[in-house]
Image (cartoon, rainbow, N blue to C red; front, side, top):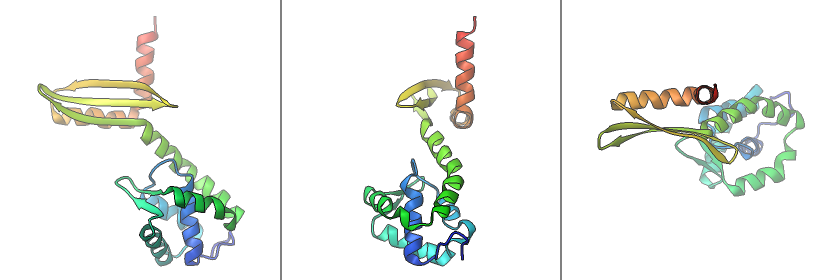
Length: 172
């Protein structure tokens, strides 16, 4: 049993999952969701699995290519029932989920894809900020592998590449 006053019943576990997904800025991986839900043994694995399947069966959560998201109906339900979770548990989850939410926001701001053209391959790289595109770069590549390497490097280092590009262009 959790030291946060959480009972771990199937209903509580459903509320916990919805609470985690409520403020999530995008898709959360199945492992990240499980880790958060089972923080400090808040939920038994089997109860968690049953609650997750029940929410999916009811159409309240969706498992997409990148992970789980909550529907609008689920978010409204989580808003209405958030106070049923102990405040200490909500604080603990907020602390634990902060890096996950930052990663999700970063991943959504950086895109990279490869394209085959009539003459070879391109890596299409974008970096977005608050409601605007900061960089939209298309680089020619000598091969599909090189285009994939450019895309991979961009996903890992977009911010520093963008800063270096600005520095190189603006330095006198």
